[in-house]
Image (cartoon, rainbow, N blue to C red; front, side):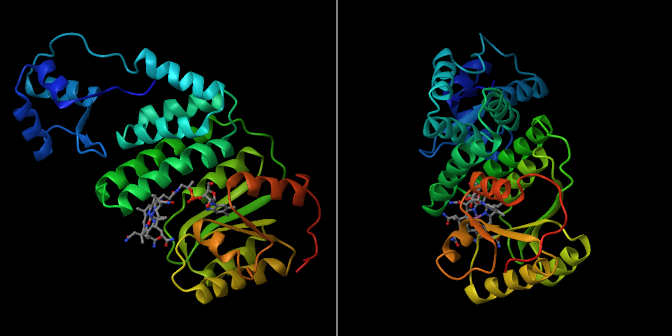
Length: 304
Ligand code: B12
């Protein structure tokens, strides 16, 4: 279960120094800490123990359990009732601690309680990261806090991927890439893991891929599916041009192209050169299941 956190007062009591000393150590970076939206310092128990051991302080008194009974009950109840907004809030709180192990435990807990991976991404991870982004945009989170949270989540997701149940190969392949200039790859990565679990061979190209090189790759590899992610749309016409370059290459041999991401949702109001615009990983999975019936077969002719 996730690691517990301690307040400044609790840490001071634990190693028998004043609160002022703790704040000084925290602010100088000697003792790792994060701040809540309200500006309160929070410390990971394991960081405090490591610090005490390294600096010769004796840890006094009993340590709080990793998660209180009340928190555990809250999570169990939220999972049992599929209360995703509550689960997302718990996930958000964990991500703000930057606690990668705790986040992995939480993800494993959800997955083992039969919440499908695409649902975890769409209903838990996405709202949690949206909240992180909103707080950052409002100036309530420092960039370092936002980065730490998103990296901790990425790390936990990478470590969750091998734990997913993998179906046997379906002999289909997919290329997953972000358009040029695009660094947001979380949705794409999640889709890649989902496809792999469904038996696809995935070529994960990742962030910031120029359309020309992607088109060449697609022409050579001839994947049945090309997944493109697009969040930042500074110039719509440029993004559309990039999409067209790739879809034309895929169209020549009948490959399908799906586009997703924050920016793609905006683009969907216009003519998008793609077979499908997905608002979520679950939607993409639905399209893929329909389009391919998940059976290998001869390359289909283009329907564009
Ligand atoms: C994490 C994050 C980052 C990380 C990305 C790390 C990484 N490796 O992915 C970093 C720190 C790099 C980053 C950088 C920037 N970011 Co940023 N970022 C975010 C944040 C907080 C979370 C995004 C995320 O990962 N969400 C979780 C995933 C799972 O959800 P999702 O992206 O919404 O995707 C879902 C669907 O869209 C779909 N999907 C997504 N991709 C795909 C692909 C396919 C093929 C399919 C089928 C489906 C699909 O499925 C997902 C699950 O439901 C958002 C906040 C927000 N509201 O989204 C801001 C946000 C997206 N960022 C923003 C901005 C402005 C930036 C920067 C310009 C900041 C800056 N000044 O430097 C840079 C731009 C970098 C660039 N050129 O790309 C803005 C974008 C506003 C806009 N519309 O233009 C947001 C919305 C923050 C805000 N509130 O202002 N960011």
